[in-house]
Length: 263
Image (cartoon, rainbow, N blue to C red):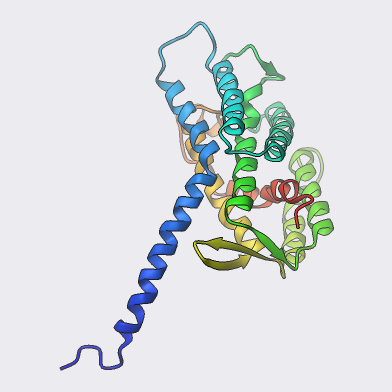
């Protein structure tokens, strides 16, 4: 007896092989997009294993981050424009960190010389790594957009960034602003190339997925002592899932910066 009289298995075989190949290709491109972030987290991990040194670990990480950025440009990981985007993300991230540390959202408990208001200057490199990822994804995956509303998205991204700083003193508007962002991007599709095939997904879904992986990265970073939440002072514990939403909204800021003047 024929176990597959309708030939479903025969038809599914080529599709499953193509799917497997595309997933491997996509994973490889994503690994290349994450080169800066992986190298940064690798440096954090190694710094935890070093014996006590006369130079504070935070300052070593600052030097490492600067050298990593320079190496990325010289090796062709980043274009000149992308380095500028990475620098802008670092500055915005550092400003974000200063406010958050001041209000006690998290802290940098280790000593350091290169610090501003309790925040080591290397603190913006987490945001710089996000900027590098988005820029490299745009280039290596050949991203293009349809139905994109750049002005509305930019205004909402700025409002979200400001709200994440001001909600300690003013009403927290992240949910209504998030709903408006969802409306503004409802008809926006992101097209990307994997191998010879062109794919697409809603921009809102892309923000959600990136936010999830940033939440995972934040768990790794806090485990490595990059910074510490109040709930982690007595021992590491997973970062709250609410941070997933925060990252999914904040990624809009990086996306707007990276997408400026792109077609």
